[in-house]
Length: 83
Image (cartoon, rainbow, N blue to C red; front, side, top):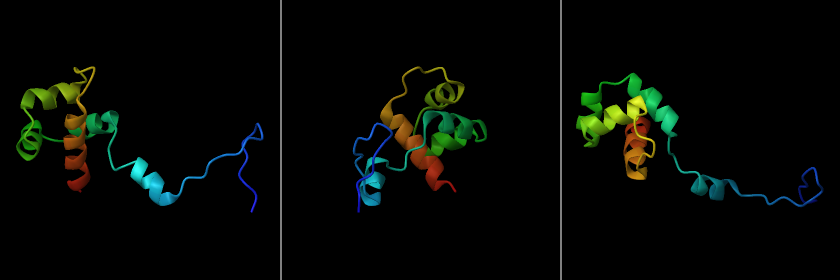
């Protein structure tokens, strides 16, 4: 089997599916979280996640420039398990 080559004829590394899944855990992007928050009651999200209502409103409205990773993780887990 020949190695994969890119356009400049350099060898490309092939990442196994298991390793790629480890590199990309289930985490929604901030944009997807903001879209999902627009369709949910902030009170319901606050009660389920333990986040303050101010945080939920500010994330939803894009008022925070640098959202904490833990906040994104909690919201992402909430929406991924909410299905």
